[in-house]
Image: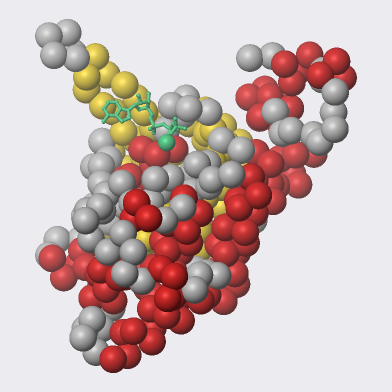
Length: 274
Ligand SMILES: Nc1ncnc2c1ncn2[C@@H]1O[C@H](COP(=O)(O)OP(=O)(O)OP(=O)(O)O)[C@@H](O)[C@H]1O
Ligand SMILES: [Mg+2]
């Protein structure tokens, strides 16, 4: 059985105050994620990637369809506070702006303590300090340089590393990483991507990686799903997609992968097409 199964999933938003209008953000998509697999959802802005992630994370209710994680129907079987707590032990999010949803006046320690509470480790337990330090070291951070600081005292790369340290503490079955490196400079990006890979290799977690960047998806994924206007228009292994793209939109995405030292005048028509 796959770790995650998404079946016939739809999301229609109703917008407008006086004149109501419907936006079909996600259109009958189907996909699955196996244990230990890294899959990427790749698509242009507005193609429905984040909406899909939010429905899996129980932040947006689907209009129709099913999401099944480890045999549990996420919108039908999760009812009690305990069910929700169990679910968020298993499924974890890493967002583009990692601390947007956290109180800026709470030190980093508190964010990591919250994660420990989810796995029933009391922050006063001496073991908690050990676990936190170990997790920070796993993601290349020096605990004494991080603990006691506030979010505004950290760089973007450090913040994202802390989010990955949180994953080390929780060891979730599934991580949904929505544009986790798009606000980080290119030289730090590779290190962060490597941390996701290490986490998968050592804990067996599955990862859904959401990105606009086909080059990144090619590097990190076992399988890629291409989203276009709310639909999954193509799927395959990175080599399948790159060597034999079927959809015009996929061809454009591949054309947009930057090539080092390529001169402007050498860029073909496909790559410059908007
Ligand atoms: N709360 C909402 N109410 C109405 N429409 C919404 C809402 N959230 C998203 N949408 C619309 O749904 C569509 C899909 O949005 P979504 O955020 O999933 O795209 P995305 O693929 O994540 O784009 P990006 O790459 O820019 O993050 C867009 O047309 C967007 O305007
Ligand atoms: Mg998005």
